[in-house]
Image (cartoon, rainbow, N blue to C red; front, top):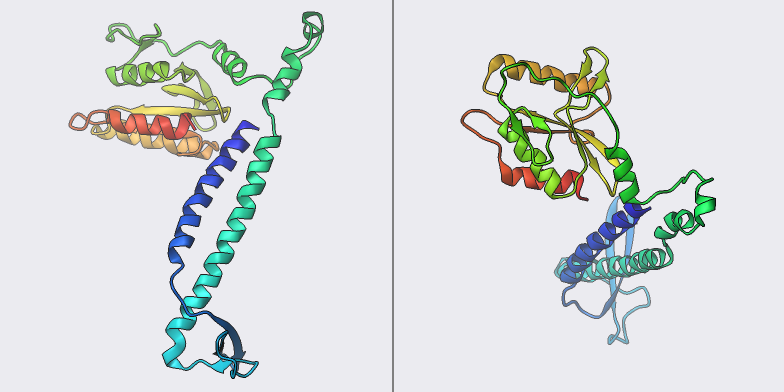
Length: 268
């Protein structure tokens, strides 16, 4: 439900932008009423000036010299109709948000007496409870080969590169739940260990995150592309279920882009 409200707020923001465009499109135009007709595939326009008491009821025919004014009037009519409809829809969005109380769904469980809660399996939990349950998942991470460098993230788990430490520490600092090298099974390859499995808490959506750290190595890059293909063949699509970061020896991890990606995928 919170995701729906966030979507409605985004719609409202989009409507505000569209409303400003419509207001800017309204220009000065004569105080005429315009009538249009189509005959044999051609458009004909007639206008009636409110001050012209001798004009025929059907209006005067608009020749080429009148068309700039006619176009301005019709554009203004369209823009004003658009503004009116935006106002109507924004009012409906505000009414829905004001009357909707998604937190009440969670409170129906938390407000039960301890004795009743002991007998109930909650069907709706808070984001915090959901994230804690997700994070509590137990798994066996991929083992490290003997002699590999020991690099530890701030949370305490061992990672395989300084760039992975940067990613892990950034996720931790932002309170984003993650699992490091949690195994999954992909058809066509078997068990794989995504570098990170991460959770967008508000959307309650899980992503796999692969950091491709040696893309200037031909064999490594070929294997990386093969793995991306396998993710997508298993229904995990780049940008929807799969996040990628990458670097080469000449192009290190872009931390500014990293922040933008986290904001886009995990904090909305």
